[in-house]
Length: 340
Image: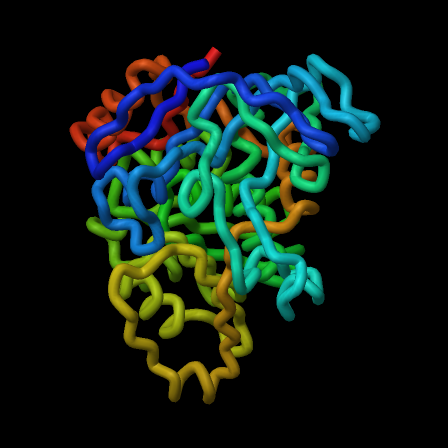
């Protein structure tokens, strides 16, 4: 079978290797689609702090069950599926209390463990997520980012009727905003400095948007929320200006969820956080129930996926996909690698 390996930053090579066979308790998937995400791009540029080369990428994907190993029950060949990429110890404090997404020994397939950038890939039932026939193979590969949206919006607490601001309108910011609305958020404002990304947000049903390069965030907040203000902020930008705007403007007693990755440690006005009783919480990846909810949200049509996919590339053109991202910069949302 074909296998793609990033041997060094900026270079993917292709190997011919033996097709894996599922052992006892394992499931063999024939990979159909692989999504390229922001973390993958960091690896391409050699800027991911927790990756060593060579690395086998691919952590958001869809496939079809090809074969099941001995002892696997209730999984039928031909089923469209995806799977969580988290490898966890099951023994540390976070794992024992059910927070395995922050396992002390966490390894993620595609980064610290081999990913699915090949024709066939083995997973196990506890990470396996069967998908409804209402989903396309493309939508199946988008379950992973929507699971990020599911988990982070859950960390925000009950959103029913609350006003929300989402900083950053890339793929993750977009899905976070969509899932927030699906959870019953009241008014929702999304901000970015890319008009292209904001236009995609509008196509996904996100009514209120602001270009932070053209409008002050404070002015956008007043324009959209008025005296109601906002009670929840979700930062998907990893930008100092966004975090500062959230702390300075959120309603007292509000909650800020951090999803974006900050390249440098941000400054936070902790006196204001304390005096205003603002809660700041982090959100890391997802749990299995977030995958299940994400798949159901897509299948039900409560969130939109088609506007998110910018372009498809063949498996052999994996390198060209990354070059396209570099060339097009802020005019790219999600790229799909068509494996089969």
